[in-house]
Structures are given as C-alpha cells and as structure tokens.
Image (cartoon, rainbow, N blue to C red; front, side, top):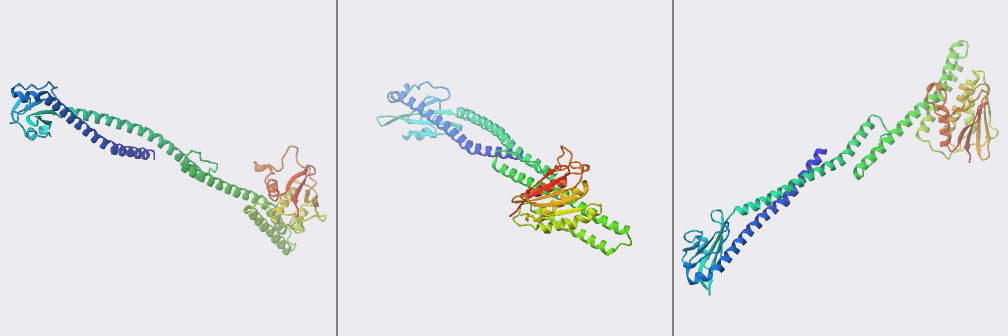
Length: 424
C-alpha cells in the first residue's frame, strides 16, 4: 500500500509539473526569441540614426558604429549594393523587402536578421541590416530550461519525501487494524484499535472495537452459562443417580416409586435448564410478582428427599411472608444454590425461613454446620476448581442483584445466608 501511495503521489506531481512546466518552457523560449529580435531592432535603429546623414551626402563615407561580434551590421545602397559592414555582397530577400520602404525580418540559415530602411525627408537612402546567430538564444533558453528541470527534480524529491510520510501515516494505522483484526480472529477479544486522527480509519477501528466487545461479551455469557449450568445441574444429577442406585440396591423396592422419583428429578433438571436459558437471555429485573408458596413448595419437593436420604431434615417456615417482585426462575436458582451449599458443606437440619422485613421479603437459609472460615469470602468466584466454593454463591448474588435484591452472609456460624427481595 505504501508503494502505491508514493507512486500515485509522484505520478500526480509529475502530471502537475508537466502541465505547468511545459507551457512555461515554451513561454521562456518565446521570451528569449522576442528579446533577441528586440535587441536586433535596437542595434539596427541605432546604426540607422548614426549613418543617415552620411548615406545622404556620400555613400562612400558610410561608417557603421562598432558593435559586438554577435550582432554584425551591414549598410546597403538603394540599388542593393553593400556599402559597409558584414553581410551578403548584394541585397538578399530580407534587404530587398526593406528597400520597398518597410522593416523586414527573417531567419535565413539559422540566423536572426532584421533590415531597417533609412529615409531622409521621405527619400530612401539605404538599408541597415543587423544579424545574429541563435547561439545566445539557445544558451539562454537551455540554461533556463535546465534550471526549471532542476527545480522540477527538487519538487519531485520533496514530493517523494512528503509522500513517504503520508504513506506511513495512512498505512501504519491500517497495518495496526490488520494486526488487531488478526488477533481478534485468533480469539483475543481485548484488542482495541488506537485512535489515529483520520476520521475514516478511526471509524473502522471503532467498528472493530465494537465487534470485539460484542463477541467477547457473547463468549463470556456462554462461558458463564456453561459454568453455571454445570454447577446447577450437578446436584439434581447426583440425586437422580442416588435414586437409581438405591432402586438397584433394593430389588424388593417398588420400581414404580423409583421411576416416579426419577421422572420428578428429570423434570427438575429440565426446569433448571429452562431457568438458566431464560436468565442467560435476559438478566434484567422484572415487575412480575413471584408465587412464594409455589417456590417454597418446589424447594420442599426437590430437596426434602435428598436431605432425608442423608438423614437430615428440611424445615420450611413462610410465616405469612409477602410474595416478592422478581423472576421466579431467578429466585428458584438462588434458593437452589443456597440449598446445594447446605447439602454439600453443611450439617444437620436445613431451615428455610421466609419473613416480612419491613417492605421487603427476607429468606434465611441456614444449617447446623461449622460455618464459614474467618476472612473467607464465600461469594468470590473460585479460580481453583478444587476449592469447592465460589461458582454457585457468586451466581446467586448476581441473580439477586439483577432482580433488585441483595444476598449476603448474615451469620457465619452456624452459617445463615439471607436473601432480600423487593415486594409490591
């Protein structure tokens, strides 16, 4: 690209210099030619004035004034004879025309010739002929053209340097955009285009930045959905596996109960997937009122059996709590995270208590475990998969905040997590 910009700029400069320089060169040549002709007329006129009296009194006494060798003079009688000076022995065509009473000029044999008739009281007494070669004309014209050519070459040199700078200024940002686009194609969505001050290039860079941000945000959502889905589906899958293994270990047990339990767990899995998909598409708050009794019923149905299988008890207390304003899918997943946390890390009885907290709904989820270690942030998204904490609680807090609520650890030991949600 740089070579093309330089080549096009130089071509434009050559065209401009040619369009301007060629007419100027022709004008210079015409100027020097006219100047040489004017000099011949001046020399011939001066000579005619100096010999006009001698031509009238006695042609033999004609003495031409001294001139430089570049402008030889000659005087002719009315009959065409050479009286004095340097010129043809007899009048040539130019002198013959001057003998007719009017000045004449011509260019015989590459010379410039001017003939001026000399008259006294209206009577033709002779002709003065001045001549010069084209050497001086060619010399002056050639030197001037050479100077013009040198200036043209200097102009092209300056144009070349400016073109190199312009090409670098235009090509470098485009090369950076190419590198940024290549990095974007390789998966680096943090790449950003640098501002160049060129409106068109900055517009392309802004579009590239927007594309990188959108693709990066989309991939972040997909990664978050994958992590959240794997976390939220782990416990239902574990429950389903335990149910099926229990049915296999007890051949005398009723197979229908195991099948019904498996279908219920599969329904829970399907509902979890639907909730996660809906939340991934829209994480904004809603103005709908959630059915608290329905949500607590699903908690008892889904988690009571799992806790009972571990010789633990689930206690639910709604205490005539108000129904919250928010997405049922989000609230269901928040409660699922908190209950999964109590199943995995807690001990003893799990209590889910819903209460009116003065214009808001408070849901406390607690167990009888040892609690959270001092200095440990349970809501920090884990970096080490072996840490065992982080993904679920971080997801629950983000869902609560998206619904205009709040989730925090209200008591570290025994551990109690409190969810606050707005009510109508």
